[in-house]
Length: 210
Length: 288
Image (cartoon, rainbow over all chains, first blue to last red; front, side, top):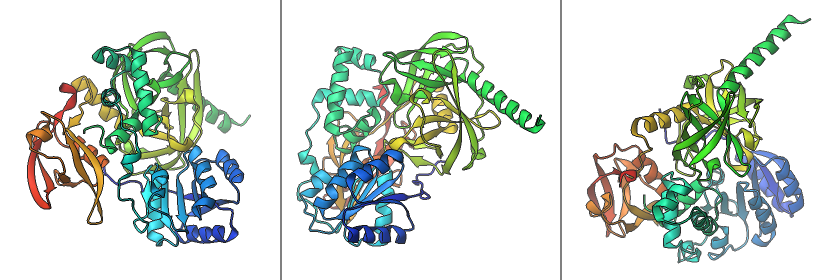
């Protein structure tokens, strides 16, 4: 039987990362109330980097002000660690643009425990979460993304069909290297590293039809 | 001499020898090496993403080197199906129920001239799940982390020597097992149809919030597509298809994959605030 449920029995272990002691305490308490494990506590970005080097199979939870959380967010993002940021200051709508990426959940301070749990699980599946209680920009973030060129779209479309680079090249009467060029340009624009992710990201952005 | 230990070691050795026969080494060109599983005497499976769009590769078996042609790739579940005359007997798949966390499994892969065997164990087994790239996997199988790139696409075998999963590297250095039943489903489809059908509606979508819920809005209808025939319009919100609620593009992709191709299916949409029912005939995009 094939169900549609995402696994809900995920073992969640978190690294609590923040430079302020008060923030770390709040986050540890939040994590424990959510019945998640606190694997380690990091008070500066290099400690976090070392911990992530050892075990990348963990979540990072950070918080406080956006300025304070930024170095930890960058460190977690560089190794694609699923991250939850519980931000205390006035997080503005325009921050959403650079805080919307796969595997990051942004929550306002003192989130309801169910929301914290749900957001954490969502980051595991590579979703980007923005707390509904935080301000939302008028314009969708899509306006900041550079659109794919028609050629890049076609190449992605055929890639999604499982076609090989050579087969795409034959179909479009271009060289395999040109196909790779378009594909990598599309990867860059979509912020992904694999073909499967590129196809799904383009579908999500409304650039490819399903 | 401890005979129990000797027997144990011999049994493990026998399993390793058997597993080694069920896998091949794959040379993707430019020094890219990974592994594959001998599904039957002329079919191999491997990790789709590792092929990087190649349409043929060189395969190293116990008996020598043979060329292989890629028959089909499903990137969303990371499975590629290859045709290669390996002459090997092929593997037998495990019954789906026989895997539990903590079970020992043996991961077998192959380089150019020798097999590589790693004893591993199952960390977690979960219900069916969907990958973030829109694939449906029959079970969540998580193996102990740290799979060598050359072992990717190799087989994870249980203590009876049956294939449980294909070992692939998941996000964040996890080792995932693509369940043998998922592979089985794809292989039988490809062997039956010659390709993997791609259900096609012909809409481009974007996510919107609608009365506090996630929804998708149609931002493009491709000409001569099933969506165009059903008169779907720009700005329509797709609420459900075949009775399945649609909250995002992934939902729609999965819902489409469960609709028999060529049959009429009900779609509920919101247009200008009104709920409408439409009928679409989802077809196979590869046949266009």
